[in-house]
Structures are given as C-alpha cells and as structure tokens.
Image 1 (cartoon, rainbow, N blue to C red):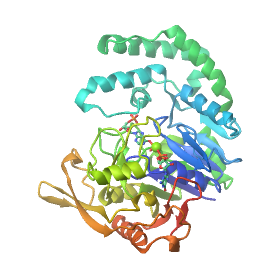
Image 2 (cartoon, rainbow, N blue to C red; image 1 turned 120 degrees about the vertical axis):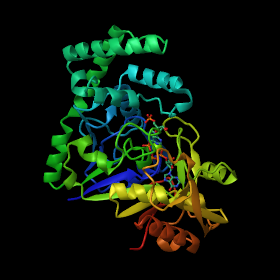
Image 3 (cartoon, rainbow, N blue to C red; image 1 turned 60 degrees about the horizontal axis):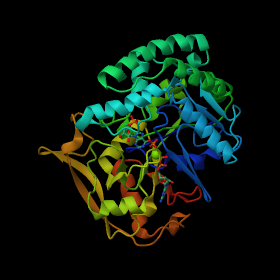
Image 4 (tube, protein in one colour; image 1 turned 90 degrees about the horizontal axis):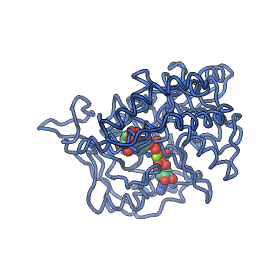
Length: 427
Ligand code: GDP
Ligand code: IMO
Ligand code: MG
C-alpha cells in the first residue's frame, strides 16, 4: 500500500506530467484534486507528445484508474475534447479507466467569457490568467451559486440553477463589461448534450478512493500548478484559485489527510513563471533567453512564452516545507548544460533585512533582491545520462548543493522530456 502526493514546488510547469507518467507505471490510481484545464501537463513517449489539461497523467498506462476528484473545476467541453483527442490517437479512454466526481464544479461558457473580460477590466492589475474560467468558477463555488456535475446530469435542476446563474452573469457581462450576453436556451441545449456524454464517467470518487486505500491499492495525487501559485500560500493576488499542493488533497478528494503517506515536490533546476506577478530570480538578459530557448519554455495551455530565471532556493525551501517533502525530483537539469557558471538564489534582501526563510508576511515580494551563490557549470550534453555516474562532477555537485540548500535531498533527476530520461540519485 502506498499513497503519494506529487506537486509543483515553483510557479507551475515543473515537469509534473513527465514525472507522474513515469511513476504511474507502478501505481493503481492517479488523481487530480484541484485546478482545471488551466493545467498543461506534457507527457512524451517516444515520438509522441501528449498535452494533458484535465485528464490525469496516468492515462497512457493501460490498467491504471485515473480520477478527476471533486476539487477540480471541470469544463465539459475541454474534458470531452481531450477524451476524443486521446481516443483518436489510439489511447483507450472510457468510464473504466477515467472517473469524474459528481461533486466537481462545472466551468461554463460564461465563466470563460468573464475570465477574459475581467482581465481586460483589471488593466495594470491583470494576473495573466490562462482564460480557462478558473477564477470565476471557483468564485461561484465559494459564493454557492455554482453548479456541480450532478446538477448537470439532472435536467430540471440544471435548468433552474443555470437560469438563475446566467441571469446574474449576463447582467455583469452586459452592464459592467459592455459585452454580448449568452443565450440561456442555447446554453441549456449545449450542456444537456454534454451531460449525456459525461454520464458514463461520473461516480462518487471520494468513496472510490477510500475503498481503494482499504483494498491496499497505490494512489498518486497529481498536483496542478505549483505552490507559489497557491491561493493561500503563493504570491497573492498573482496566483490561481485553488490550493495547489499536498494541503489541497483532503478537501479536493474526500481522502483523509492522515492517509497520505508520502509527499514529493517537483522543481526545475532553474525557475520559470508564465503570466504576471513577482519573480525574484527572473533573468531578463541573455542567460534568461538561453534558459527559455534550450528549455523550450512556452506555455503548454496558452503557448505564451514563459519568463525564466535561476533556481530560487528561498522559495523552493518554503514550498517543500509546506508540502512536507522529504525528498524531491529535479527536472530539466539538461537545460543547464553549457553555462560557464550557474547562480542559485540563497537569500532575499528587502529594505535592509536579509531573509533566508521565505518572507510570506511581506505584502508583495516584488521588491526583494536575491542574493546568489555561484556554482561551476558544465558543458557536456547530459540528456543520455541514466546513472548518477553518467553525470559530470559539476552537475553532481549542483544537485547536492541544491539538496542541502532546500533541506531535502534530490531523489530523482530528469534530464530530458522522454519517459526514460531519468536518473536515480544515490541515497
Ligand atoms: P507540468 O505542467 O509541470 O506538467 O510541465 P509542462 O508540461 O507544462 O512543462 C514542462 C516541459 O518540459 C514540457 O514540455 C516537458 O516535455 C518538458 N520536460 C519535462 N522534463 C524535462 C527534462 O528533464 N528536460 C527537458 N529538456 N524537458 C523536460
Ligand atoms: P501546470 O499544472 C503555469 C498561472 C497563469 C496565471 C495564474 C492564474 O501546467 O503547472 P488561472 O488561469 O489559473 O486563473 O491563472 O496562474 N497558471 C499556470 N502557470 N502552469 C500552470 O499549470 C498554470 N495554471 C495557471 O499563467 O499567472
Ligand atoms: Mg504545465
């Protein structure tokens, strides 16, 4: 029996999809518990690349059960599009290996419309969201005006609740944002067709997971986004609308927190961020361009270029501690090949005060200056490394120094996008 939380420890896009796909070969259940189709988890198998948004990263392994639990905000159009896309590519997807919670909230067309309109409205304060309706849908959940998947499956209930919701949202769209309202009848028809297609996937996923645990099955909880985008612990307000790390699991699944046995964070060997918001170690020079170019740093969901910078040890230590990580996975180490020297953020300085611990009390970390430690680089291409001894001494040193810096050793290193490109670290 084993239960494992895998979560992003930076600003998202740490390579969670790749690592989870690799681990899923030996896991019975792979579970998404928060976020929505704002996530873009890339899995590369041979010459095939899959971008998963809502469907868990275990879907490519036959025999695994993939669960989208109650804490996820589900856009039925995105979900069914992904299902069809995978089936078209020969991946078996059905209610047998993909299960959807009846208690998950639904993202409607109006949520996506309002996401886009509100971003424009905010001007300078814009977050740079993915436009997937995440903020508006989680707002409705908290306001108790949202619809859940079970509401969608009940035509009468759906009609009453969607009519009430849309009356309010249309007023907002028309009178505040001066845009075109949505047609209730067309929306009811659209979502009733979608509901029929969703039905075979829907179940009580909390009950399913608790039973799986009692039966001794292995369960992996797949985080989306990253701790620095967590609504409570991230760089608020430049965050997403859910709890992105291990802390989001119990509420997002109905799985008791004390049953989650192991927690592993994932961080790149450097940092990226997509969208607006503070990013202390951001590089706007040639080094940043090199990280983006070599690391192909473009958003999986929106295609936007990502911002890049050196590894931020202060933020990573904070993220790993929040997630209760005892060891972690370092991804994209291969992208650092070629630098003469590599810098690593070890502390922040702000208004004369030095912080080795993440200063979560600061209203905004925009103004902090990062103090760096310089480490020797290496020139060798390491994408073919499969053993610790295949890595050049400077790369081994880099991995050890980062483990010491964040207070948790690196257990696994990813050296390329493919499933096989992984190195296990010596204990
Ligand atoms: P996720 O959202 O955390 O799953 O990460 P994304 O899939 O959005 O972004 C990670 C990108 O890096 C994807 O294009 C992956 O294929 C790629 N990737 C993952 N691990 C590695 C690695 O170790 N080396 C390289 N070069 N690319 C990687
Ligand atoms: P994965 O799971 C990187 C960012 C957006 C924006 C902010 C809020 O692939 O790591 P939202 O649409 O959630 O309201 O946007 O969060 N963001 C991500 N950045 N990876 C993600 O997911 C992200 N999901 C949201 O760019 O800054
Ligand atoms: Mg991503």
